[in-house]
Image 1 (cartoon, rainbow, N blue to C red):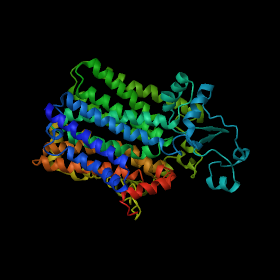
Image 2 (tube, rainbow, N blue to C red):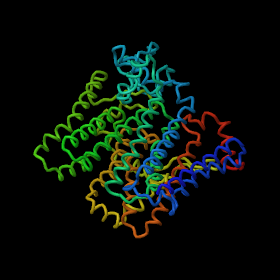
Image 3 (cartoon, rainbow, N blue to C red):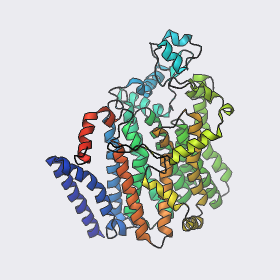
Image 4 (cartoon, helix red, strand yellow):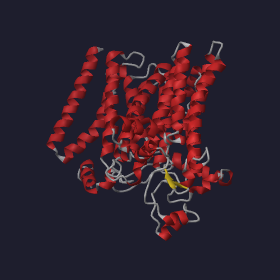
Length: 528
């Protein structure tokens, strides 16, 4: 096995040298070939004779772990470094996207509002300051995407990143943490969490999954989940990536507590950590935190397997973090808006009067929710003649890896394998969670955009990985299934990278059209 791994190392080294030579030569056509060859090389690494196909997840050894760490590191570099490319998001042009930084300073100064000294008196005099059209009509100056209540500006994005990163950074280093760096932190550790969570799934359910299939699928899920965040990392995606970070580590703790921890004190400790992370996700992005419902089937599994005398005590201990952190978040809301359940959305100064969301039952619209579900899952994205020719569409449409959910979840053999593992309830909750989140996003938002899909991508990615694993377990033709899963994963990675070059939301491609034209010329081999 050692010699096979060394051949793998030699192949990767030779390919990296090839890419380096192409970079030095700087011939556009060769550069384009090198770009697409990366994805072909990934498929080559997982061919049926490769060590990545013959080594399975229950027999990694030291070399398998080294390879896994190597690909995880590559994924971190690819997702973290490009966040600095767009001035609109990297702090060079902060505008309203430095609210985390300002709130950290405000809290250290002893108050919860952002201390602006340019409040327009006409805004205070308006009968309804949340009327966008009226603000335009009166040419009122205001701070975009802030909550405004009783003469003060507040940040309506989740406050947890402020206490977890921004305030400690300021106290330790004496300077302000630029917002997109917080997103880089959350993304880096979310990638690590994905790799660890999928290793746990493999050890529990898919022990014979080939290492290469695990790596390609995990990398694809990371890029699908984090692709838009890489393009627009500040503020909105700081909140979202923070929620994803906490939820992934919460699921890691819960999975290990239920399926691998042997001693009761370790089970309870890990579950409490999972509860802390899960509760903190509500203080980042509440729709992302709805993934906490996945703890329900895990709790049922724990209860069925429990053989001690203190299960009620254990569940009370595990529930305490939700109660304590929830109470603190409610206190934070009450101190700002005199309402423990108001995070600030109703008082947001944006393009839509969101005070309408203060009434829950008056806004229930079943047709709108069903339309939102269809659009979020099954719409075809924008298709254009100009490279890269397409833009984000529905969750089950944009990326081929997500097609596995449609293809495999209906398979009887897959369901039989789930039944054998007693994981059908877990799979159902993972399947239904994005539906619930989409309904919530549809109800509480004037419209769905790509960053809202980030609330579900990580869960849909987990589900796709689970179904890929069960398909490999239940099929009589593993080679064909491996080939399909690997091809879909690599194709998804390619699409995620190409999406980076679609001009949108003041991203790199949008902000630097001349550089984008050069890249387009290279990747289309001079055709555009």
